[in-house]
Length: 251
Image (cartoon, rainbow, N blue to C red; front, top):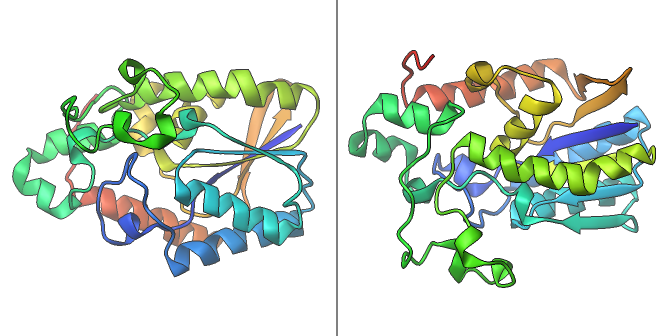
């Protein structure tokens, strides 16, 4: 059984170095091309999928649609689940990452963005950006919707979705494609790969690059698909973006 995780292609928030979280950022032209290239890499690798999953945010949905179109698999079942959403960045959402340096201590910003337990300031209940005002979540109890999350909090909902919806597919020996986000993917990998939480800040996820997880004797073995030099360049870009916020020994 195989599960492939893909962080959505570059979004306008990525390009503009702004915190996105649960805001509905859109794919850039580069991001759309990344999603198409991800589909091409999957096609060349010969993986055939029986089911696909994504979050309820456009950048995840659009990336998945482009991959499935490239794979000629638009007909397979797609499940959209809010629990695969990006980590909610609370008051940081929509802010420029550069401007936020002047509003918050740099070590605190780094903790909020990269550590396992750090949680940014939560949105007020009446803030227009609170997810209770978003029609995507109208059927959910507003009290359960996050107004700001740590990676640990994100992990709880992502793992619940994985165990409830995705793992049963794998148990039926179905191959599964999942389009998600940097932090929801980090949260999932921390558990699937048994990565110590204190090292999670060193895990960088490139945009639009398929990460293949094959189950080998009960453990997942991973490999990225695509040009290794471009993948390293993509990861370096992620590291450089994080470095803008500074780093302090958080362990």
